[in-house]
Image (cartoon, rainbow, N blue to C red; front, side, top):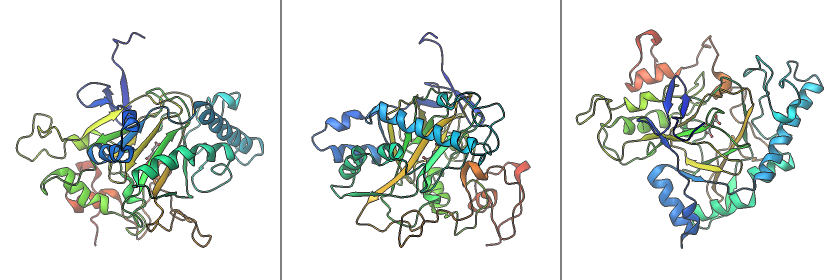
Length: 366
Ligand SMILES: O=C(O)CCC(=O)C(=O)O
């Protein structure tokens, strides 16, 4: 393919051209690592954009070793009959999925378990380089990383909808950060992470749709609020560009014409890249259009001298995550709303966000 040809990325229902109006290229900031004060440079990047993208900072060979360990683990679950449906079409080594292997066919690997604690996996997700980077970001304070790991396999046709992480893990340090690590070289059609640059900022006026989002959705706690479903605000990334439609100075697409307006960004990732972002940064992943299993792991980091969300760190040997309730992709197809549970549509209505008429539901009574 010539480099002149447009590249498209499928973000939920939107197929956007990379470099086009709605989707820009995510740029690495490895130059921060050359700064006199690395921590300051990284913090400035985080404050300004809501993320730090570092290109090829972990050894590729070790990342691919971690990938191989996860693929072998999944195959072992098949071989021993724990997983009935074959995950891979031929040899597990290439990670090619058998046809029809969707979300229920790929094992749920989140938590602190034999595969997240496999030496080759830990060698990546708790790599000493990451300790160094987070020590720099946290002003020299040694970081701690949650024992709970979000190791994911993304099936063909799957993706993660638009959300921010605060709704899942907001009971500890406000400095908590996510570190997303692809376990492979990922082309744009292999479910790459996309961030809404600038969406995390808290310096907007109260009438701004992004301020409203941060003052409502971002303050949700999926467990406290008894949410049923994914926890995603929406699956449609375009909704964020429409948040300010009612405001003056908007252009024909509902954008306000200001350079600080959030913009979606993504890129093809290399094994060895890391993407660090704040709990308030809206993000999603693109649809996996390939027949290859996309593996990644998100880990969480914070200064060790601050309280940690007890659901995700080993305190007195309890580590429960969201207990029996699953959010994210594994909650996508729950059709019946259980008694006492709430839905994102109900919350959105209560907060005053646009609800499409065909998705109306009962109002929240609280
Ligand atoms: O890997 C994905 O598809 C989503 C990752 C994510 O949501 C996160 O890192 O918080």
